[in-house]
Every structure is written in structure tokens, then in C-alpha cells.
Image 1 (tube, rainbow, N blue to C red):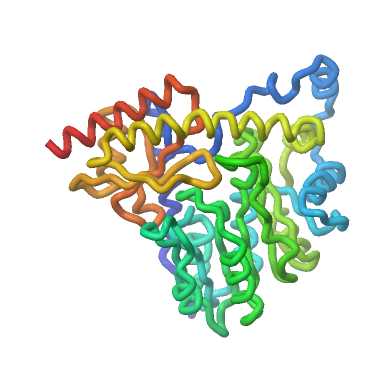
Image 2 (image 1 turned 180 degrees about the vertical axis):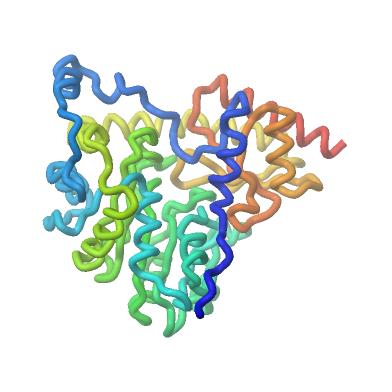
Length: 377
């Protein structure tokens, strides 16, 4: 008789669920400050069209017009290679269900948002890690990649740009990962929800999609678009695996909502998408200098590697307290919420969101420093 593995909680989300409604300021989210509906649907004509929408089920795999908008982002012509899901979280979860069986080997890039890691663990998979190295500005450790990926590896999974560090892999690093996947025939799952949230420049982080025939890319409107309340994500990949994921999708959620499909189509339109990403980058580029100023002023307490893309950074702190205890004290004593580095596999760090209104960001940083000083003293 097979024995089910002990259930692995999704620690990041469990922690946020416990505290996010009890604090004054939330710095635990990894996306840009959310848009208002009036910012997205910004004309009376669009508003009336939305009001006239019949609240039926959409196409279960996503409305055709929306799947075309998503496919266009990747230069893909075949709309059947796209599945619309309830956030990227559903895509990642059902892909694990589709691809893994007990005993399968998975290689996962660390530190990471541990959703796919936890889903794989709960399916009884064996997990190895390859790493980004903080001392080298979160550069990929190629030796750890070579050690983690072998002939029996079924899936290689990563987040790029990375959560929690914001590091975007370089072209040689991408090529090394693709080569490792091709060598052993592994599926390559690239969660790319932070593409478009670049801190510098206007060029989007390139997708893994199209680099390898067994690559599946996952996207979402939650992070780089500032539309988490739509709960709208997608997976794009080979038709045979997307069809299989669709069957799992029907069990988990049946479909995303009609309104989220229509609003997502507007967000990804040629007219609106550039406006949204410009807003995202404005928040990131205006918020980051405040973080950098505070870190520079209190360099004995904090250090950070600047993120390439994303609305967050991975702050390293220099006081004697574990990250879970620190995050709990910040919530209870200073009424701000951050995410412990332990939940990404990296102690003495916290994930901190900075693509937020200035007044809120400054207050949060002041409270963080105040508690670190209290602990040190």
C-alpha cells in the first residue's frame, strides 16, 4: 500500500493569510500597487460595454480573443497552446499534477516562491535545488545546476525574474538551463509573472518560451500588471500538455470568470498594455530610491542586491533573530507585514515590497528600522 506524503503547507501564503488583515501596512505582496477598475476601464464606452456583459461562463479554456492576446505576447499562432487559469497559481499547481508522479525527480531554482516546490513535494516527488548566489549578485551557480539535474530529472522549474530576489537570468544562464533540460529530456516550467516590471530600461525580460520544445511558460496579470484581484493567469506550451492541464483545470476551477476574461483582454490590448506597464515601472522606479536610501543610511543593519525586475526586494538584515520571529514581531509590534526569508529557503532575509505610494513606503521602512534597532540594542 502506498503512503501519502505528509502535507506540505504553502508557508508564504499561510503566513500572509494569518497576518495580512491584522496589520496597518502590507509590504508582503510581490506585485505593484493595485490598479483601480476606473484606471483600467477608463472611458464611458468601455464602462458601458462592461456593464452590458452577460455573466455566463466563458469558454472553459479562456475566451478565444483573450487566448489570442496571450499567444501574441509569445509570437505563438496556435491558440490551442494557451490555457487561461485562475491566476498563475492554478497553472503551476495543475502542471505539477499533470507532469509528476511519486518518485519523480524535480530540480528547482532556489531561493524561490515555493508553490511548485510544495506541490511537487505533496505529490511525492524527489526535489533537488540549483542556486542563485547572493555573494555574486544572485548569479546562477552553474555547478549546482549540473549537480541538481540528471538523467532521471522529470521537471526543471524556476521563476524568472526571480521571486524573491528580483534577479533576471542572463542569456548565458538561460542557455545553460535550456541545455540542461534538453540533455535529459526534462520538462522546463518557467514562471514569468514579473516580466514587464523591469527596474531599468524598457526591454521586457525575454521568455523561455520557444527556446525548447518541452518548455511551458506561465504568466499572470497579478504582478507586473497590478491586477491581482482579477485572479487571471495562463500557461502556454505544447498542445498535448496544455490539453492535459485543461482536464485538470476542469476539476479544480472549471473556468476563470467572464468578467476577468473581458478585463484581461482589455489589459492586454495594444492600447492599454503599454499604459499599464508604464504605470508599473513608474511605481518601481520611484519606490526603489527610498529603499536604497534607507539601506545606505543603515548599512550596519541592512544590505540588498538591487532587483532587475519586480516590485520587491530581498533585504538581508544583520541582527540576531530568525526571519520568522522578525516578521511576526514586525506584524505584532509595528503593524507591518513582510515575508520571512525562511519561507524561500534563505534565512536572515525578508521579502519587502516597494512599488507602493511614497507615504506608505516611507512609514514602513521607518518601522522596520525602528524594530531592527530595538533588537540590536
